[in-house]
Amino acid sequence: MSIFEYNGSALVAMVGKNCFAIASDRRLGVQLQTIATDFRRIYKMHDRLFIGLSGLATDAQTLYQRLVFRHKLYQLREERDMKPETFASLVSAILYEKRFGPYFCQPVIAGLGDEDKPFICTMDSIGAKELAKDFVVAGTASESLYGACEAMFKPDMEPEELFETVSQALLASVDRDCLSGWGGHVYVVTPTEVKERILKGRMD
Image 1 (cartoon, rainbow, N blue to C red):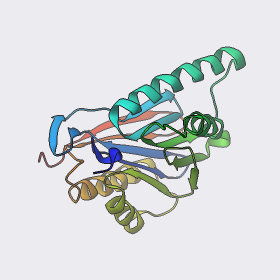
Image 2 (cartoon, rainbow, N blue to C red; image 1 turned 90 degrees about the horizontal axis):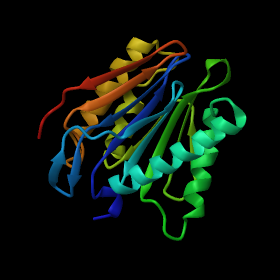
Image 3 (cartoon, rainbow, N blue to C red; image 1 turned 90 degrees about the vertical axis):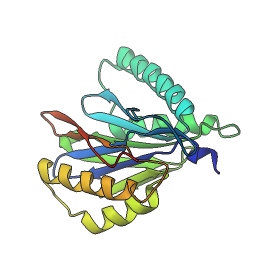
Image 4 (cartoon, one colour; image 1 turned 120 degrees about the horizontal axis):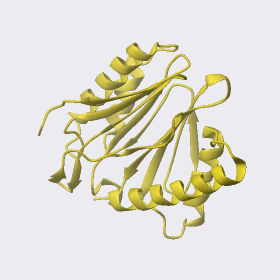
């Protein structure tokens, strides 16, 4: 078993019309044993920028603490919030400087940039970015997420339809992966509000 699969995870970010959704499962396991069913994988950097960290849970939490530290330094120096593109470059640089002993994480970054344009991207454990205009996925359920998102995605969805689409894709996918599941956690972010919802899924 790969170290990335040790705790299990499912992450997806999807773009809508001037909005985006980012969703994750809630299971924390040690291989096939479930430890917690309310684990948080998506973190808020500021009101318009979120990061999801799949992979090894301990490394995810360590990496998140480093990112908060760097983002707060940026806010003090620049007196503004970081743009999603800038933040993606920061995450990539932090991962790449540890490339010989990497954080076992695959981040998913989602944010609203200039003129409320949604930005999503994912990267591997050494910071190689993959940008997308529709959706990005990560975690042990990524294969089934690709299929579900490919089938369900359509461009320029309104926030409510986007929530429905990303939720159905997540729930359908984690049922096909034994290392992730136990419900879901969905954020839908528009220029004016952030909606957070908890999904109930199969509890097995």
